Length: 270
Ligand SMILES: [Zn+2]
Image (cartoon, rainbow, N blue to C red; front, side, top):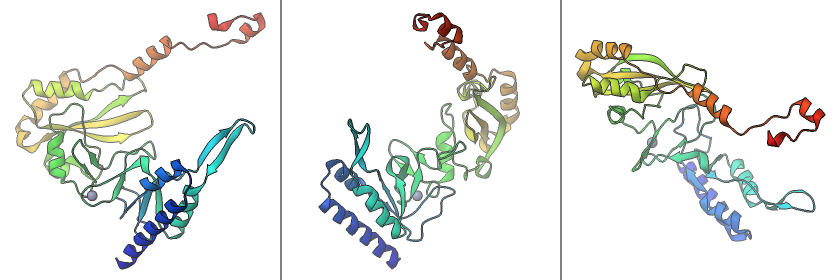
């Protein structure tokens, strides 16, 4: 613990020194925005040996040089600082990809690092909590009766917190026919008086997602009704693949055919 504090103190000192000697305004703003955090609360990430992570924009400041026809570096304060911090065992991340938990101060990703990524915490208007600090039952309760929200936290399985699965393998995506609509499903359940349901995001791929709908134990007596209503009702919304097809059809995209070249046609006026 003492060693960790010493690292943090030293890091802040180095950042302060960089501020003192920095002559570039943009770099100075970036230096002021750097913040240190006590660890990751993101699945798949191990804390660095120093136990300290810095968030920032580590790019150098550059500008376009008309004569050289290329970008030239104007100020390299940030990448130089980044090297120093890394040498101290501090992990560096980009500030626009992470957020910190207001309970434990650890950070989790707000933007994907892979196709299968799912948000592991909760970011609401009033608060931001990592998956380690969330109360699973409160979290799931807050998702009930909502057609536009779902649980994305993989470590919280509704099954472990008093819910039973009504149906899974709903799909929404671009492969055609993947048009299950949580809004339509919510409407069906509300239509038969069921409100303690929630959605769970089961799988995220590049072009589609899979989700399931769950019922709270307190309405267990209605499970068969819920299953039947969903089986018989229309759980589909608009097919995203159809939307995509229409959008492409109507998009002002023109292609030049080899024949156009041969004929010297003005293809833009097609
Ligand atoms: Zn936390």
